Image (cartoon, rainbow, N blue to C red):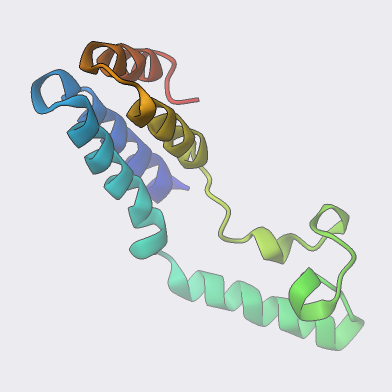
Length: 123
């Protein structure tokens, strides 16, 4: 969570440079920073350990922590292992907003929407 929060803060800092660098360039750079949560993972050993423990729980008491691996009913019914890689920051929302801003026709309009995004705190 700390890593992803730091990435989000870095992305927002880059967006603040949009008036100088250009809206689309800033958005592209911010998106690359947010994508590091997927491409440059941290705590890989802890993630692996969680999967080991989930397997041990399945073997010992048939606990089904994954729909795909252990045929659990759904994530909403305790199969939370399937969401282990779910972002812990606002990255999905930011990326959706980036797509909306990219579709705008004018640079002033894009810069205004970026400013609103920064003002709202990314949420």
